[in-house]
Image (cartoon, rainbow, N blue to C red; front, side, top):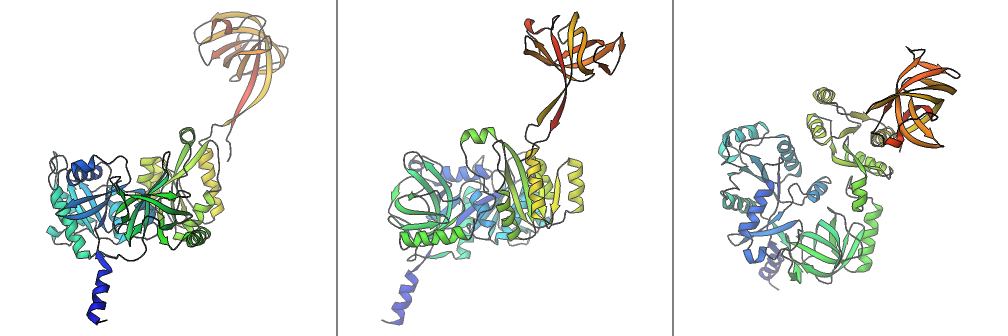
Length: 515
């Protein structure tokens, strides 16, 4: 075989693949509207009408070339995957609203993009809105060390209005240009690898999962391993729901045939057979979970009934985050649960406090310091910020934060009893009655139960206490007293105090429950 023929076969094994694009930016700056507009204009109408379910990704076509979009802005799979330093997206679109400029989440998105080390395009959106100032946006981006091309930098920028549909073509052309410069290729004759971006149980079809293939070809009949999940690919659908025999690199697809649901963000790969899939799954399970602080799925009732404590976790290194994740999983409660809304490595800073303020979260650190300005901001906003050097102490604090959501235990101590001898006055909110203390003592501020024929009629509070027409704090056994019974709710006629009733006085103590 000639050298030229060998080279030709090598070339055929590589193919250019479409770019995988993620859209990031501040809330309400137009991430969703950009994706929707691209879907509406770049997926053929007859095909778009065939999309029956949201699968987390779609492919658009521009100038005869395909582009794959993760179509949930800031997609949870992208977040989960990037936390391990893996690369799921080839290109990012950083969306900034022309009238609002750079906001906290814009800065976070810039940091995410820089950490992921992927090229990006700035999309200045809403240029049609009153107050739009694209020049100011460029300046604010420069302050964040993002130098756009027309300001002497290297980052492409496109101005657009999704409302009017302006700039969408230019944005897609820029994505394709960046993609060409990246020279995205894939070995087409290798076993498929990629990431799980959606996973759920379909009542009719069983467990389904949406995959983004990064290299190779996925075929019906393949065995696949993704973390602790394995599957035998029974059928493959493209993002339009059409059954296909082969899915290729950069293509989003839905597959059926899983034995258990794979986790969102989990890396998958095709293997030789069931034994190989099980062996790989076992080795990955023993290595520990690859995703951190995953939200547990539960029944809708459980989700509705449980109170949730939002947490932000910061640690010194990735392995510390993994240790914290595993230890927090030992916390179990039927009434409350935690949700880690953000986590990362490094000092607790202003952005962490601002995120906590926006989400009502507490910030917990491990082997990290708190910036002075962040500490002051947290104190002003009343946000809990604590850092620890011992994981046990960190977890106990997390337990305490969760316990604060529990209704306290009410501990009652009987103080005394009063036999009612006379009723002097009734009003909508209180009764004034007189009686004799037959047991213990009666004290101002006590909780009162009215007892008739051995049953509790109504509960209230002792608002005023008199003895011999003088206000007094306490009346002891054997003495007579006048009391004002303050009602907690509007009583029924039969619940009004009558002569012969007994009033029991209690001291109530609220005890914080533990988990």
